[in-house]
Length: 406
Ligand SMILES: Cc1ncc(COP(=O)(O)O)c(C=O)c1O
Image 1 (cartoon, rainbow, N blue to C red):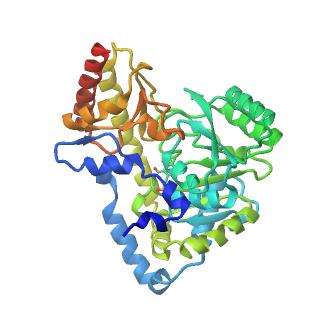
Image 2 (spheres, rainbow, N blue to C red):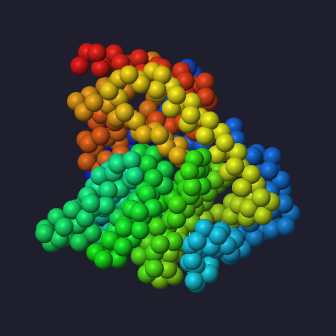
Image 3 (tube, protein in one colour):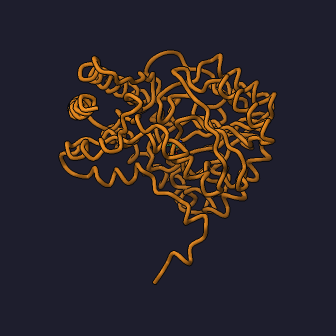
């Protein structure tokens, strides 16, 4: 049967994630995957989860197995308000400023439905998180990209883009940004630029979606205030998730914002999944109360710091004398590597996979699917230090070979 004829336009235009496709190839036993964005599974505190689950069943069994409210478990929202206020993020309406979601990926999809009409202008960083393109893409926006440098989004570039859009009679709905340890570029927006960005959004009247899955994974330098904490008028919607601070398998994130838009999101979430699983919310609450999340985050930070150093040293050792450039992240999970402009990393990927190392090509992180062809993203959280060293040596041999030919 020809299924194509039954599909909606939105589903026909949906693209498979390049990362998920590559991950399928990386199951080979000798393959070193620097492609994923996954936490180190050896660090998950499995025994603490077992205790937490046992306690949840003993104390809250029937509730944990029941549907929860769409907004999420109130006791957990109360704990999250405390955590946000510790981070300088005011929640003037208390738990009404928070809703739980099934990962921040769901928040991205629901925000896309809530804010984007087909053809609306959405500002994104170049490069940006490809899952956001997948989520927003279902609503067919027109993306406008803003350049970044080592200090994150360039404010002058954003100002120039806004002026150009004004000239064309277009007004952006929102800017989507990952200001801390960006995925994929690894860079962090400086304090000065954070302030300038929130001021600019105020002056030029656009919303900001601040996606912050990696902020807690800082292994160098001082924490910076979130955009949400600098926001006076409720124009920043903040997304956080437990995926990197507890475990992605919990599929739990949360949205922070004013009650009115959150009410809209709740209605959309009802259509999507009625509620996020109560059982995982109870487990998270238990892990928070037992201090297990703090312990886990501290351990993750130590291990990722070491892995990042191993990757930085390996890159320097094997590619230090070449024309290849990369950033050094202060946290998070990624290096962004830039080859000379004329060098396309796509054909290199087949060679790399044959040699037993995988990465994600830069084009996956651009809305046009063609920019960033000379760039690639490397992950250091999942592979072991030894795999990072070997993986980079394999990759460097392939790159060096190409550099010689071209
Ligand atoms: C920038 C960014 N946003 C959102 C997500 C989705 O996270 P979650 O597991 O909470 O759905 C990811 C996952 O890697 C991410 O990197």
